Length: 447
Image (cartoon, rainbow, N blue to C red; front, side, top):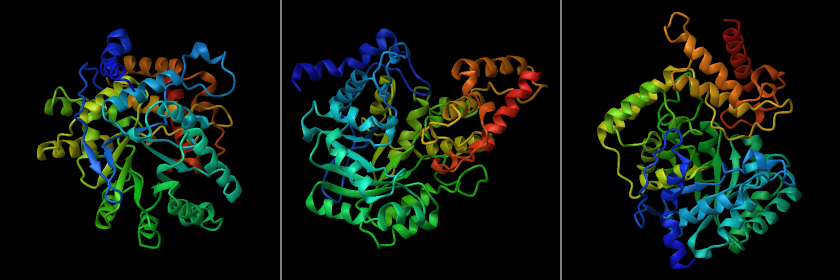
């Protein structure tokens, strides 16, 4: 990239904000974004200098709704906007980009490849995955693998993962019995895969089995945030024990890559009581920055991936890690209190990963849950008729739901088929939650 183009990119974020992008929930819209201040970690396996902020390419911007009707095919990603985000990232020190054949209806890799290929290959590191959940055969897996190189416009992949494994049946069927892992190990030997790892969604016993020494992993991607850190015994949480997983990796000198530092955006819009505590601790810090500082504060973390849709997301996260300011003891204590507040309320543990979609009956499952959680966190949750604010909150919940979600895609359309459950990495009983939201909504309507 030419120097004049680089200088333009340095100011691009401020220009976009001035043009009216506005701030998004939990992120700061401040205009200054540091250059040459990014925090890096060194990969002990190969000496790679990896930016602490990684760009997760699973929530890429889409074209405007008015433009979608004129599109040919299902790809509604905004390539120009994605290019701008990638360019701005590289100009400000972000050098690792994580994607998958499963992201963005299957178009993330091709959009990512087009955006990155406009830069010198030594400016970025590619992380992607063997996402063979729908067809476990070796033939289908090989076809997927070969297409990845074509879509990503590269002849080697820096960090390759076996994707979303959490139990013996899933792992053995997708990677062992069919010979896929043996193939990937040979690809690592040949240099087409530089580092081989796996991403985890499952139970603790299986994690320990995978890290027992039976397999030679270069890195592991885990879900880690201040809510999943040390609350595995809380009945409102899943069995995720990020603290224990991190400790196992650190003991074995295997680097941790972090996914879901914001729990799909939930920690960027915490409960209003938690938000007040954050403001009291530092009135200038964004809600999201606390979660990123928590994840990045751990020394064995190689990079923290964030799925960034808007320029404001990218700017705020770059500021947080340019450079990283370690959390003070009182800030750690505050985040423990924030986590306790989150656990007191009835948030659904959805990360908006979209793996449950499409629903065969048309439900917009992630948006239904997001609206429910957002209403709870923002105080627009009308669950107490004696509350003086009940009527306003009731109206806000119902009108907001109809504005965000088409009536034909709301929770009352759920048939309870359960197809979505098997694909949920958070192991949410989605039909049960849809029924709960539907009952709650119907009670509000009757009132």
